[in-house]
Length: 130
Image (cartoon, rainbow, N blue to C red; front, side):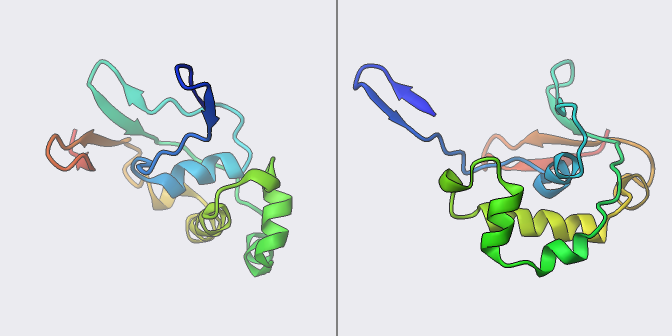
């Protein structure tokens, strides 16, 4: 929530840019890794993702077969106020988990982090070889 103090208004904050490898980062949390992922390396001025692994999500196929309302009610902490794209994002994350049950093997093949920098002109995150 954002609070516009001068106007006395409170409204939901929205961030159109979610950063690189969104589904990989979401998969880590959805599979129960309790630690917050610190992805900004201030010494390099880059985003650094991984390497990490997560536990395979048992029943991911069953989750993907459920209807939107079921996913909303069971995978949200606050289903009444989720944004319209919430279920779509969860489905995409579940599919990512299904395709990458062991990211240490399929995503971080060389056991190295993925680095990104923000392009000054486009504002997009671009991969950096490091």
